[in-house]
Image (cartoon, rainbow, N blue to C red; front, top):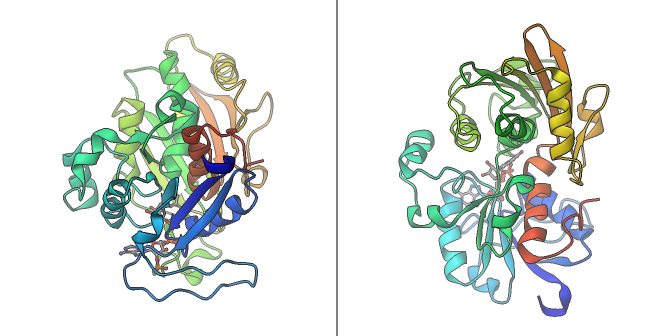
Length: 331
Ligand SMILES: NC(=O)c1ccc[n+]([C@@H]2O[C@H](COP(=O)([O-])OP(=O)(O)OC[C@H]3O[C@@H](n4cnc5c(N)ncnc54)[C@H](OP(=O)(O)O)[C@@H]3O)[C@@H](O)[C@H]2O)c1
């Protein structure tokens, strides 16, 4: 890095995750948002919402010259096409969309309803669940930033699977509730104020696009995932109903999580009590609590979908990728 400061571009800076990235980078001691663009071709630059906001320019990939890393905050499909051009220009990519999370192009086509726009790049992408990917992130050129729901489910679940604490013959139930910002800024009937305020509902039961991603990373199909829409703006609370391997107790599951995440700056395993959204909103933390309930171990996680579930984890990945202090800009 020249002068020890990373020069960063944000493509899609006019969306929720793009704006969140701008706020995080404004406090980053060793990275600067040099190029701040929308990612939609031909779109008119937006005037700043607040006087302190930077101007969001229209898309111009020639401006990436000299940029160390570009964050793509575009919808899936569009993101992969941008990624190819940005990588060809010699710039590293952290993609917040779903385009490089699934390793199998056929599964991508089934899940997202179109052929993968840059399948030749799939083998190069590192799945950036930071706590479980550090050695692959160092020096990576293309990082697939995980989905928000998958982050909230995989962080508590992976250690339990890896340590053999889950009954492999039974199914894990992941019951997740998300704030409305998870759907992005576009107006839709389901997510407009009148349908979200004072309401609560389940959606895409059994066929949400994050399920294949969760199953791929967990290495098992034995997962039921039910997402819900909470009448709040930010945050995901996931409740996992885990069938324990024979003889495994909730105390052992908690001890496993405590040990795996003991040195992690952004994962907090509770000794007593359970996570709440209030404790994590606006932070890069994933909070985890464990309880015994009947024949299940109940594991509850909470994250801010726009921070640990998107832009915060993306900055954490950039820090590891470029050899910066991992917590820089995120405390
Ligand atoms: N929201 C979350 O909690 C979350 C969490 C994890 C991952 N993600 C993923 O991150 C990406 C961005 O999410 P977001 O919530 O920030 O979305 P968003 O608020 O809808 O913003 C999307 C951005 O993409 C641009 N855009 C829209 N249509 C486009 C197109 N056809 N081609 C190129 N650019 C286009 C928009 O530009 P204009 O302003 O010009 O329209 C805007 O800058 C998505 O792929 C999403 O799945 C989101």
